[in-house]
Amino acid sequence: MSGEARPSEKGMSTEVNRGLAWIGIASSLVGILDLLAILIILNNWVDKEQYGIATLANWMFPILDQATDLGLSAAVIQREDHDDAKISTVFWINLMTASALFMLLLVFAPLIGAGIYGHAIIGYMLIAYGSKLLWQNVYFIPVAMMKRELRFKELSIIRICSNLAEFAGKVGFAAAGFGIWCFVLGPLARVLVTGIGAQICHPWRPKLILRFTAAKEYVTFGLRTSGSQILFYMYTNVDYPIVGYFFGPTALGVYKLAYEVVLEPVRMISNVVVDIAFPAFARLRYAKDRLIGQLVSFTKLNLITVMAYSAVVLVAAPDVLEVFFPKYTSAVDAIRILCIVAVFRSVSFVVPPMLDGIGYPNRTFVYSLIAAIVLPATFWLGAVLLGDSLGYMSVAVAWAIGYPIAFAVLIGLALSTLKWTLRGYLGAVGGVALCLIAAALVAWGVHAILPPIPGVRLAITAVVVVTVTGALLAYTQNLSIRSAIRAIKGDGDAVLDDPAPPVEIIPSEPRDDASAR
Image 1 (spheres, rainbow, N blue to C red):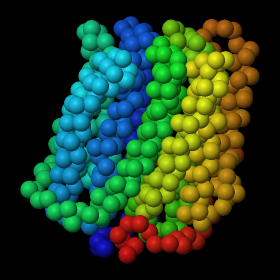
Image 2 (cartoon, helix red, strand yellow):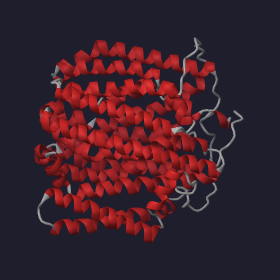
Image 3 (spheres, rainbow, N blue to C red):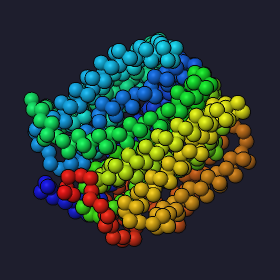
Image 4 (cartoon, rainbow, N blue to C red):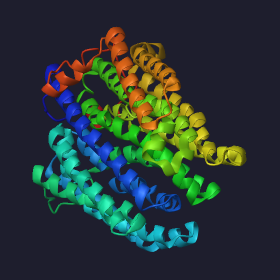
């Protein structure tokens, strides 16, 4: 075991809070840029059918990313026994995997595009994206090391610059007449800038060393983690081909827009916590009495941000579409259904990093496997049983039915790992959720009596949600904007000042990582 010093509570809290502040700034900007790019592109150059065709290609992109990474970057963050032989071997394994996957794409992507989907462009888009899998080897080790060191200020600056490049690439290529190719060329511009920035901030070159035995623990941990991630991206994206198969590319374009308005921002908002959660939990895995407090803090942060956003979109969905996406007003009902799913998703994003960080990636895999069985089956059944009456919205309804089942499994695994009770967890975070629900109800009442001027109603609804939420959190939960300001200043108690009651955490079985042996 490495002799790395354990972080003090004050120092660790300060690093976490500063990281949250920087990631919050970066994620907010990224979310705005993504939404703005979609808004500009869909209102000017890409129609619903084209957007649906593009979705049939890009739903596979994150799965390709995870299949290439194999969880090795997570292993670099989690483990402490680094040396040149191990890290270099990890790099060469990743490069070989990326090269093999790219070769497979060259052979099979044209068959997928023209043969399965009936659109040859889908295959060519997959091949073009495959070049990204090779390039990411330039930065995946430096970025992993920087995350391990909690250097989130530099990572956030890199992320901001790279996403500005993606925004310029998407909009620029769309305006230049490249059509749906913009959804591939934009991300390629992003990873190009990411690679350059990562090497500037954390220069790293691999040694000519390939010792599989030296990196065995890294690969073992990474495979367990990547299996969960691959399953995650499978079950959260497989609804796209199902919608396309049953209802066609035009319906898929509308459904994709609904997803982009609700669940994609939820993912971006949650990344504020998720990006720092894994390294934070990994460094706290020896301080077992503090894990519950950290989980509660991260859960509250996600609930506040995600539920506030979801409340605005739920109440003012017609206004959101009328103002920003007037060609997609038929997506109102799907958006409101997905807002329900968003609340569960906000919490579910926090738990897997905790399980992985403290050495239980196998439990994350169990959850992901169950979700990968339940959700695709629910999507398919929803389309078959409800498709004639609800159309593509049947898949949105299936989300609201199937995801709570998988969510219950995840919470059960987390609580059993921490030796905590559901009553204790709900007692710790339930007050925040109730504040947000109350704010949504007040906003709904105000929205109902406002004149039907979309822009005005949307703005007032947002103000009501934020104001009521802030007041309720301040008076019932002792949470206020001061916490965010103190976090930016680096006050170590800003986020972790409301820990859960102390609970003794004694794992009943050996941990999965090497440090437990």
